[in-house]
Structure formats: structure tokens, C-alpha cells
Image (cartoon, rainbow, N blue to C red; front, side, top):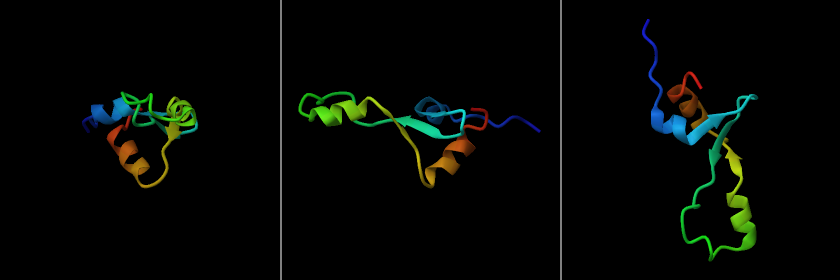
Length: 65
């Protein structure tokens, strides 16, 4: 049986931790950050754990990660 191809766009955007959580970067970090409050700017530095229906799709698209 041939190997399953990894969807590269998904592999670049999401990482899987040792406890099998899916982690992604928070959106809105490129520009126009000076108008945000300090609390918003600090929260954008942190990664976010995914929850919900997208996890099944992400795991299917990245079988070896």
C-alpha cells in the first residue's frame, strides 16, 4: 500500500504536541498591531490549542506528524 501524502500547507500551520494536542499560531500578527491594546498584543504571542471539528481533518491531512 502506498504512503499517504502529507498536506504541506496544513503541516506548516499546525503542530502536534506530545500529548496529541493540535497547536496553531494566533491570527492577526502581521501589521496594524500598534493600535491594539497591550493585553491583545501579549495574547497574540501565545499559541492556541485547537478544539472542535477541525482536529479530525487536520489529523487526516498530516498523517505522519
